[in-house]
Amino acid sequence: MKGKTSGRGLKALAVSMALGLGMTACSRDYVVGYLYATNAKSQPGLITGYSIDYETGQLTQLADSPIPSGGNNTVTIVAAPNGKTLYVLNHDTSTVVQFDVGTDGKLYPENTYNVVQGSGATGTFPTAAAVDAAGKFLYVVFTYQNGYTTVRPGPGGIATFPIAADGSLGAALTNTTVGTTAATPLPYIPLGFNPVAVTASPTVGDVYVLDQDGPPGTLLSFAENASTGALTALGSTALPGTTAAPSALSESPAGGFLYVTDSASNLIYTYRLTGGLPGTTPASQAATGLMPVSVTIQPLGQFAYVANYGASTVGTYAVNASTGALTSTGVSQSVGTGPSCVTIDPALGIYLYTSNNLSSSVSGLQLNPKTGALENIQGTPFNAQPLPTCLVAVANGAHATQLVH
Image (tube, rainbow, N blue to C red; front, side, top):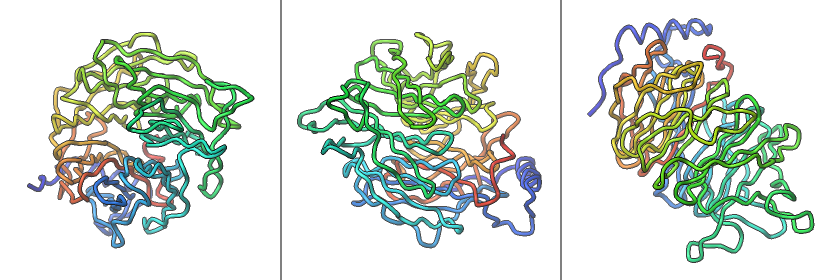
């Protein structure tokens, strides 16, 4: 069933915000950004692109969409900070594919890379990726190191790819310090048996990885060399409980706090970061819906949103600016079945989208920047390819993200 039209108050707010960016309201179909959703069913996988209407947040599928992802079982997609390049992870073919974003939102496949390059050592089955705030390095976590398979599972790792000015990737950095020696370097840093998420700090340059190795699972911290991208291990923290299944993480836009979802305990933890390290125990925790698998923070840092796969909802939380603690607003917004990923448009910062894995759709919600409340966008849900896995939004060209900073 299609969702109801957004209320006049929120729509007026969107228009006034758009005018603040120097946009005109002469056309309802003005494109403020683009949304891209990956799916896992097709072989190869597919990427569906949509334009985002500035006034309503409504999605319109791009004419050339969907396009092949360049590999099988496409699991995630991330954008460079400038919004001009996307990186897609294909799990079963163990590749990263670079796509350039055209001025009309069209995607152009440019290069395909093995997850780990060099010395014949290749990692397999990538699960997550992140780009640092400067747009200079791509970090990719993968499930199996060289020589391990689904028949003979082994530990995974994290590879660091330098990003050139045109968005292309250089060879994965050589690691001679973490879990290896200078005599036998590796093109990755070894991790535990099931790394599932990675994020790069927007402020201090640290990198964090969630590993389900265990239970209870582990949060690992690395310091990034801003010049070379090399990572130095800072330490690790075990998640609380004995049955934890860490599933997603996100850092507050201003830094200082890290948020980790636990899909087994239906909780989200807040960690205060000190010197790049989270505390040994969470500073606070909050209940989520059933099976939280994705979390995103509003660009202004005032609200957090959690996609609950098992409950088919998005939970809203107010963020305490001093402590980072999350307080539920008490309202969970229903979306499509099995939301697997949640993101917010970076231009206006008021449109939120989920990829709904089990109902083959994308849900659109408009958020109130004053209260955090969510309301269905006109026309939601929007059609997607079968088994959508994740999504990312980028701003449309010069209409950048100044409003939300």
